Structures are given as C-alpha cells and as structure tokens.
Image 1 (tube, rainbow, N blue to C red):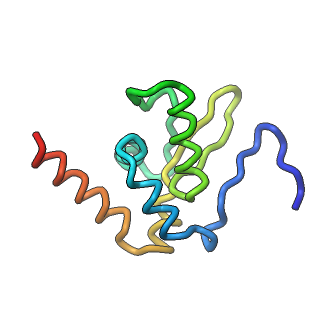
Image 2: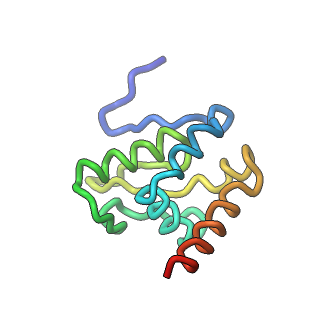
Length: 115
C-alpha cells in the first residue's frame, strides 16, 4: 500500500464500512452533533471543522472527527489549510439502507422529548 502524503487522509472504501464502527461513531453526542450539522447541508456540500461548534477542546474535536472519518461516516479533505468535512450519505445508504435517516430521526425525537 502506498504511503499517503501528509495532507491526504485515509478513508475506508464503501465496502469496508462496518456497521459496528458506524454505530460506535454515532453513539457519542458530540459526533452525533457533527453528523446532524452535516446532514443539514446540501448533498456534496462541505464544512470546515471550525464551522461546527463543539463544546470540547480542539484536540477532542480532532479525535471526534477522526473517529467519524475512520468509521466511514464522513469524508475529510484538505483545501488549502482548511480541513473540510462531508457526510458520506450515499455510501452509508448503500451499505445500510435507512440507517442514517433512522438515527437522525431518533435523535430529533429524543432532543424534542428532552426539551
């Protein structure tokens, strides 16, 4: 396997995305907040990490984005000095039909109930 350049980030191929990794990634409230933010954007749109306000330290934020990327939930690319994030909606739907919508609907229902 070729060595990635320092600016390239590893992502699992669609067929390598594992259900248990996705469920683990989505089980954390901060990571779910990231997914909720990205799901509210248009298909193929990207957001910088700094656009998603998480109430945790920068190093913890970096960890959450890495868990999401390594699970195959998001893609990350560098554009200049910014790291941009996008939800891998099509890949998740292809591997686990309806999972993302179900999780996001359950999250919205729970947030409504807890208000």
